[in-house]
Length: 204
Length: 244
Image 1 (spheres, helix red, strand yellow):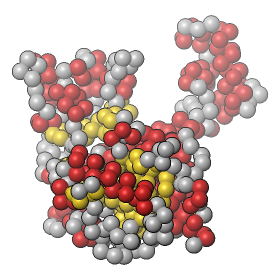
Image 2: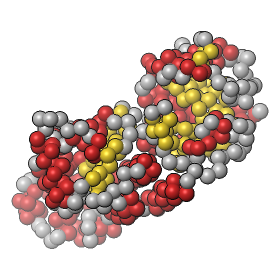
Image 3: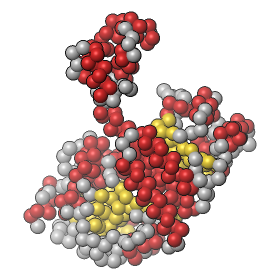
Image 4: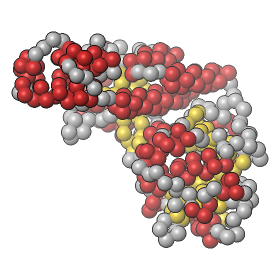
């Protein structure tokens, strides 16, 4: 199940958000060595603000096993401030495009179920919010993986080296066709979003 | 950013669009061959690695424009067991030049594979792009030619072109599988019916009983919604199940 945490409910879900920062520390600081963002028990950067939206994958016991962060592209964001050279042409800055960063799976949850669930959550959330796409920096190797799931991915620039890995700036499209394809390949037909949050776009 | 890099990215965007417009594998194959010529590549081969149940390299090839004869030569001689590129690609997180794949000191066959490819088939230099799925390494697509652009920008562009060609190839193959009305065996039998063969002839050709042939034709007729054999042949052609 995917829990969406934004400014409207971050107090209510403080515990989940806290666990999310701890999981990110395990993945990005301990495993991948991003020392710059080590905040003791947490991994954090300047984009972990009230504007960020967190999609968090929870297991049956409400423990955080994966997640990602979305950030409005109308504000200065990671791509525009740090990785502008990855984009060939204007960097998307639109109300219907958010930036996706900190995509992570906890080490014990790296299987297709959680992976698919996160992308289903992204599509459901994005479609509910009227997003046309999310921009992301991803390992080039991963592009065919998510294309195979049914996601539509457009390159925004040529692959380049970042910390010894080939990375590419991409735009992940949000549309009903992608949702239908990913649901088919994941063998799931139900919404993955937490029940209490469904329809929040229309009620808020 | 340099004008040089800009034009490479434009080539990639043009290729992605062109691939999306293709509606069949032969058309995609032609498009890919023309796009890669920009970087000096003349040939390509997209293949999943052989496995226990499918030991021949040729059976895992999904799309290719290799020089005439090379694929058969390579597959029949089981060169994939010795080719340094096919061994190396499984562990690579990114595109690499064939020349970067290490050749073990005792791999004499591997060295001759490289020589035969270059001397007899114009495959002097190549670039291999590993393709990953959810479970890790899945397939590779290799590009080759006489004088290829080995620059970093060209390699990056080729990597993107590879990813999008593979994606389109997979989509077209899935679409074709979904669209198919007949089973492989039914198609085979109907192709012989279309060629004017009797059930007895077909039984001899496919080494199955006449009775089995008749059952296959009957089930093909049901699937094609046809009341007799000539109508079934016409419908099979109309649906693209057999060649006209």
